[in-house]
Image (cartoon, rainbow, N blue to C red; front, top):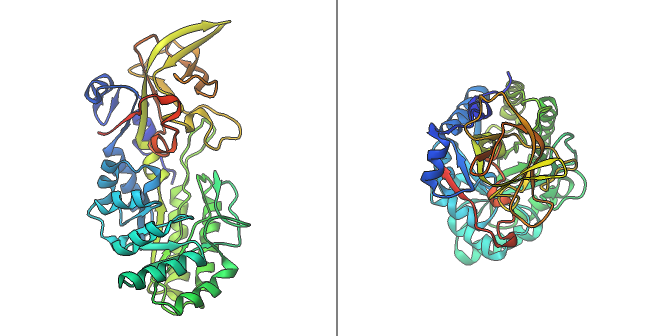
Length: 406
């Protein structure tokens, strides 16, 4: 089963978002550029995951993918838990109806102040080092609270094909698998409530078999490490890494194969060996990425030595990833369209650039688009994840982009 819900197909008509005509939405927002997220598409994506993954899997939303409060509020009613990566994101999550014990806090370099806030809030802290474990125990003793913790594990295997590898070899993320038994002994000597493990290998992977293999290795590692824990394992976060297609050659992830593999792992490995474990799949980009667009307006059209440029009022300071400066080794164009021209047959080769005074501000290079002029809207797709908050919004002092959930 391939994942092809309405998302890009619906949005690429490029005249409506969430049922609202694009120009009307721009008038409602009051300015360009802006990000628009379609709540109906968010609902569809969660429904697809619920229908395809086994019933024994809990869904967690990784807030870092899109921490807009309205988006997090909406998703809090659809998923089982939320994962945060800072005290700021934790506050956004705590403002939703999600109980604190269904919020996890991951990330290296948590400050003592952040750890104190997390302990006081009662969220699950996914520890990244022995130092964090010691600080959390001291904080719990000081506050008179028994902290809820899990160990983030840096596994002894790597996952090929991921956009960002976050496991295997030396990593700033997590505790090396071979060091975990000693850390579990340290935890057992303190008043920490150990819930289990978080094992995440990498992000943005479109190869289902590679992901299935990683899940199998993850579960096997968790079972082996559980033998060193003083308490039964009640929490196993197997990460996510589900990718979405950004470029023409990308094929959508075979979500059905992932679901079948997880069902087998639950029945054959997890239930017999970790019967108390709540198994969590944590997803960010896969949930929100295809449900959003970045809309910017043409402020100038110019010809330069045979090349046509559309200069827009947005740029990499809002949508860094589309410029190719967010991890791309070889720059490729994100999907782009001219607003309201989805049915146009005439096209021309243009390059879309932003308003920043740097040649890095390139949003689409030599793409075929319907003819456009000053005042037209340019729509960039796959903009629901790692957009505004993953971009250098203060660069060169231009205004921030607006955000709207429709």
